[in-house]
Length: 477
Image (cartoon, one colour):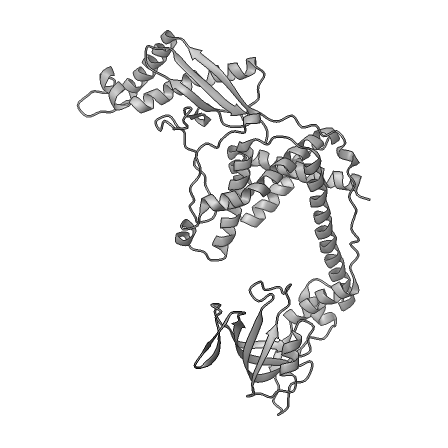
């Protein structure tokens, strides 16, 4: 989020009543990898604490000269039926291409003056300039004001006095067992039990069920007590439940233990308030369950042959060793990232400064795009996406976006203080990973990112991540 290298077409012309004059407003086109459309907002309001204005005036003679130069070029290039090439009357050019001529004159006159003005005043814009009170007419002086945001002053004195506790990342035996069971379950086979017997612990019951969520509000009718709940019934077909399994609710264990195939059961389940599935948390559900069969799950032998099926492992012990290392690394990474987030949160709280609204809006758009991309991957149609309330969605992203922008700006300042840099080799490795993930040829990816500024953004983000890691190692105890 550094100072922008502005071109004339990146300026937004407006006026004090915030009405944009469409003929000279440059609309940026945003391309997205996912298949959706959403309305982008006009130029964002600027943070008053960071807003600066400059006034520029160009003499009438220079304005007229610029108009004449542009019109002559159009006369040479225009192809209009009834006129020979290069012989189109000036008056026709001025009427037929009025908007285009005005835009080119604007760009030719504004850019150089704007750059000179901000250099003279030693200003460094970080947002697109918004042109105010634009007055551009042939034969008259050009006058305009440009408003833009500048970067805030960020004093990070004392950043290295923040303390954060390094979590205990040792993998417990229970956590390793859970990892191992996950692997074994994915390769287990389930076979029906043929003998005529009841369900016992260790069996898997194949059931069909229907559950009605009971509501506290009930009504009495001629047919008896009826629930007023509007929640749809919970249903399931051919669902497997492990009898006595640690993930099986006690009510299901108690009801199914001792039951036989073909038996129909009725029972209620009181779900705890912290139950993982939100719609059931704290609810009471009345179930009708039919036992359809008994299944037995068989696991593969824990030997060298099975280990080789799982990957390039020499023995079962070798597989368990690698699995333990992988699980331990994953746990450490997760806990360290959580600790880093806490550290950044404390830094954000410690250093208060105004945030450029343009940065906040960019971050809101990025968060919104990621969310919509996820919805598209989950199957949401373009038509349904268009029905979303984007104003509300953007507002919901704002607080987090502000914090993310603050964190980025603080990390940038700390990177300067700590002398953190990212080498070209580091960037090349990141590009290679992106190329593999996106299946886009490496050089085509590099060229595209170089053109749209993506390469600089990747380097910036890598530097911030590296700074966070350097600071965490320095401050964690």
